[in-house]
Length: 371
Image 1 (cartoon, rainbow, N blue to C red):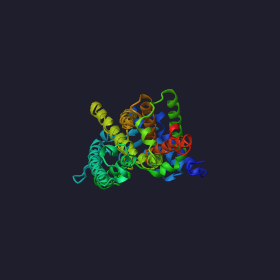
Image 2 (image 1 turned 60 degrees about the horizontal axis):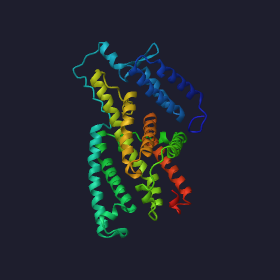
Image 3 (image 1 turned 90 degrees about the vertical axis):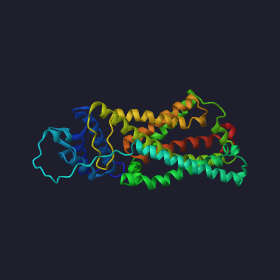
Image 4 (image 1 turned 45 degrees about the horizontal axis):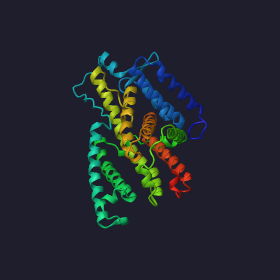
């Protein structure tokens, strides 16, 4: 039975079996060929789970096409159309033939730098708002020092930075990408909904890792985040913010911008060193990354993700190691499903499980001394 709850039709099964037979990675002739086949195999699996016959037909058509689509099938093997173009003489020559359009992999490091500049402006905007709030003694806060430890100001400043950055990003990046902001980041909410059961299972795995980590490598007591939690009313605010707000914005930053940009940078470096031509984009305009690029980028993305949360946990080794592991799971989810919504759902579900355990262990946040 497919993910949409319907029994697969014979036509769907036939299309899937034919696609799997043609593009299976075990039939690859080289590392670059395997990378292409792995991408097509993931597309075929997702299409089958979604019951999408048209998507499977497109995959079959892509393998049958020649230079125009980037691949041709010959004796059961996929060959690069770039090689085909180099070996074959054109049948027709025309002075009016248009030049090939250069394919741009997005988002890249330039886009990440632009996002950082926007976030910097968001930080200044949020700081001004906080100073205005202190000036009017909002929530009984009379100084910037007190505001730095007040949960309303902490979450308020984060929310202001997030919203400012999001609004400007939604307005600016489509001008460079020629597609909407979420489409450029491969949001793919439909894929996340189809795989929601498996994605929640990934969140459960992260939750179990957190429990084991807490036993084997417990963090220090009375960390900054613990102190904030003990502030009256803070636990519920953190619960809502940590489940409904933070996962989305953190995933946009780390798995929406940083991870793809680093994947593209790693592949670009490899292309410069080896002279290999860039991989063609998928039909939807998104990049095809090599396996080494995905592994390296996932590790490099996880380090700042863990460091960002380090202050909350007193920079303890155990929680830091856990955050690295959780981030690697989120990176794997994002890359394997090609859906930022999928990693966001795993992130939000993981936070929900952690807060729910805390809720139960403290009697509904009534006995925070039991944390």
